[in-house]
Length: 440
Image 1 (cartoon, rainbow, N blue to C red):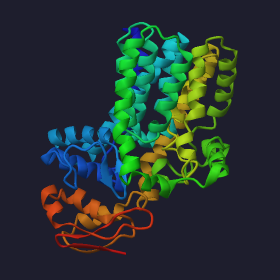
Image 2: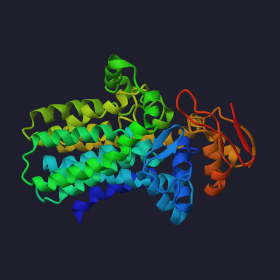
Image 3: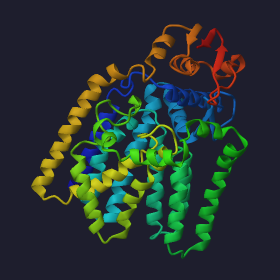
Image 4: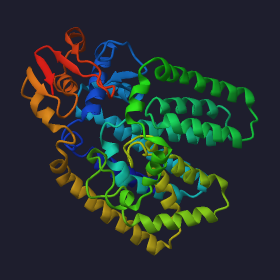
């Protein structure tokens, strides 16, 4: 019973801090959450998305395509409990918790140290980088969970051959959860294929074939549909721009001082990591370098790969697109943390809890005051009071907020909607439906 105490306390700390006022903080849903929530509502209503496509693999929205795993997760909860902020955000809590447990298991399995697994889970639980994403409707949390299930399955394949099929399925779910993993997962597949001794070729071919088949809809989306429009719109400018963007994710100002400038990605005035993480991380890097266990280099490898999806876009550094850095840094720091002597270890953990206490206090009391417009709270006010009229698109894509907050019948919307022309950025805008008109 004693061995379950610390894991249980970490899980309890995670759940309490994520579920507290989950529907009220942040103050409202932002446009991607509204799109996810309404499409989940539409699927739960008649198995079609907002535009009438039956159970799609890619959901058309705002000139881009949202991925299915998180939307269908919300759809299940919506069917059971209705459409609201809790059913929209709860999957992020559950996927993030699952990811933390997966990281605990992977770190423990690779290092053969329970303490490293527990320290990794603890540091992730209190991490400012993960915090906001783990209590709001961000698809990346699903991608992270299935990515680590993919890694665990590859590791367990050494013991049981059927785990290669589970690895393939997990990889597929990861790339259909969040776009960053459409870049990282294939890189890991290639590295694994090159570095491993292949004893069960037949089952590996089956697993690889399953994964390659899953890529067909993605290739079709980018070659034959308009899926490349969004990539062109957000793509970085040239090789130098990509390198600059990549290195920006290791800038101490981003990591320890200011964090992401996008206020939906964190709390203004707090870095992605605590100042205390800096020396602990350096010690962890040194311990990894000295360790003779080759598998432990998986985590520095993930840290190197993590910023690539963000580096090829214009907005950098970008905490969300580079979210794989959070667990990678946590495990490396955990390796450093557990090298301390017992008394110093307890003191350090206590200091971490104090840092997290201040962060959580500020988040609970100040975050909404500083980020109302960033979470497009104005639309929540508008569509809580009116059911028609002219609405400005100043805060972007107002129609989706009308649909979400009014729980507008999907079939009725499909019949009434009228569209504007697609903009130069590839974003389509709804001009009107029912009694609403949306104008600049």
